[in-house]
Length: 412
Image (cartoon, rainbow, N blue to C red; front, side, top):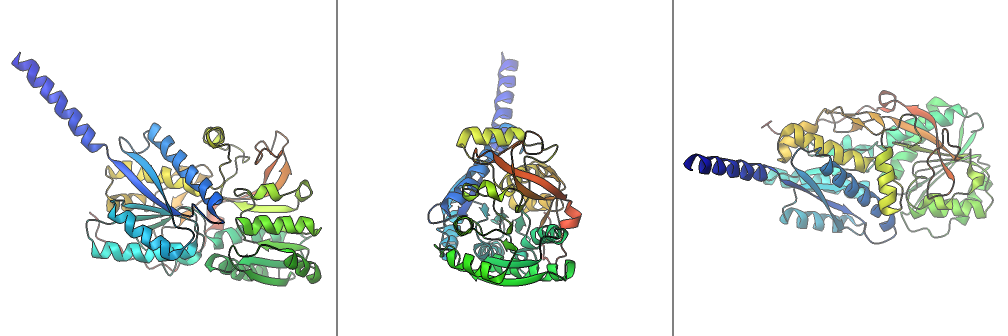
């Protein structure tokens, strides 16, 4: 009898110990849930949520689980910093954000200051989508990890495709007037000058983010410039309204874009854009051998939306793997497990470069095309059109140098 009781007590002890080791990793997601970019950011959050629940079901983080909670920053830097403080006070030690490089820069600084003042209570900043190169150059920080390509990497891929296209002779640049759009404008001009010195830049406009409601004056300027090509890193309604105005104004040019596949934008694309609308993206379900068919299909079934950007999915699967490798949810141990990690993600082989915490991964240049069951199997928004992969850019080709001089805390 005593022997049985001892065994029972031992079993209960083991169960209690196992339960104590199974922790919940809570991520505060600070992005717009209201305002003009709410729908776009809503799709990103759903991707994070679906990826987290899939990772939990597959035990990618071992016995630990991941949970995401949305905090509405209304697109404001100041509101984001208030929410960051609120989240930390509520015990969140993982912060995710990706809707604005301006917000991202402010969070990097705030997280660095918090961690310096609160040893043992550090937080990690998971940068899902921001694209300003400075975040992993001059502003790089040990506690910041970027899981998507920066604008220099995207522009390197897109200008290579532009340089190959002999129909491109006169290019009009139109970007949003903040860190990301300004960086794209600069790098596009520099790279085209090197790759195709015969190309002319016939226009270079920066627009106020989310403020322009009528793009018809810009369409008139593009026509007057004689441009045969428009290059734009606009996203959200700034891209949707631009494409609608181009159709209404009968603007017949090549379009090179960074976010034409994002939430809601394809609904502004007409069949006439087939073959002339290009988009550079981090993944495509139409890529040969794409391994994420189940995830894309289950997401579509659950939300009746498409998976738009890969960074949110990559964030969750790499975080889960880091937690498992670290055998801990402590941020400093997880951060060191993330550094240098070389996982296989939905776009192929990747690496979280230890030098600057910038993910290195393949990119894809795609063209709007009719579904044909062969190289265009998946459409967008049930439109019968999707993104045909024209070129896969290997990670080492898209990779860019970094000036990061990272300071690291002692390894635990």
